[in-house]
Length: 350
Ligand code: NAD
Ligand code: TYD
Image (cartoon, rainbow, N blue to C red; front, top):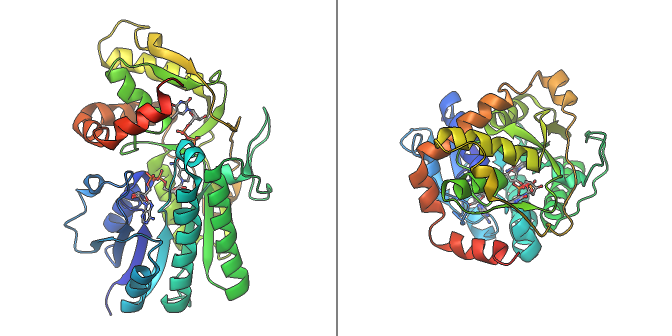
């Protein structure tokens, strides 16, 4: 018998590339098909070290392209799907919600239909990778559990909540074997510099202002991307069908404290005087509908599947910063061209 085909969507993006790499390396018995449209956020450079592997294949397909997705699923037996392809940036969702509905909602339903019609629904599974942002916002206390009611506030989180609901509905209605995880903010290598940490690293290296939204008091829980990829691997193989698992780092930071920590490390690494990078901090108009705080209770995953974060934040953060400093060409390439239009529209006169 040949290898089992597993589709990973969004495998050229930030988290997807870590998941693809992990599956290709750890599971030579599986054939990994990376389905990605290569939007601005997708980059095959992220996968250089696996592109020659004989259990890996890349297909450039937009998941909203029903005919192309059906043709893929009907041409060979697809054992499982790990679905990460998405429009993922909250600020973009505020200016252009329709793209988020198309990819995150319609694209997910196109994949569900194709898997239902042609996939190995007896033995395989459809795994939807989602976000803690579907739960809305927390005050100073408390954490999101799997029982927290959905209460999305941004067009991004509304689209992810909607796709989570479709995945659940396909389980209830058609008995599709599905699993969902909702994870907190990830940090690590290969993240597109529209997100907080790589954007700030890029700006510090270029001596550009560091745009902190509002008062910088919003809180995020940061998880090392490799720990997320390992959680996805664990849940894919060992999670229970129809279940949701929360994934988090137990690592809450106020944005301004995180930016200060980054500035201190950058001063040291760039041989600048202490305090130089922090002088670039600029408070800018807050994001519309900015969720105050996210925090995850991951005890279900920890107790049931024995997963826990493996990397202490100090260590993971240094490694992350080192990666961007060692890969300035990557950072320069992804910030050339359309990135400057985006940056101008989002930040100039903010
Ligand atoms: P990303 O923006 O870095 O990558 C998204 C990938 O999806 C890109 O490779 C892009 O080309 C691809 N894509 C976009 N639209 C597509 C389409 N229509 N068809 C096919 N491919 C398409 O995103 P990320 O940060 O790696 O997030 C991956 C997933 O994890 C998303 O579903 C996101 O909601 C979820 N998530 C992200 C975080 C985070 O901190 N980044 C946290 C929790 C959950
Ligand atoms: P981001 O990385 O966009 O992730 P998310 O919105 O999904 O949590 O932002 C993380 C936090 O940093 C969020 O509270 C918004 C804030 N932020 C800034 O203050 N300035 C920025 O330039 C960016 C991109 C984000």
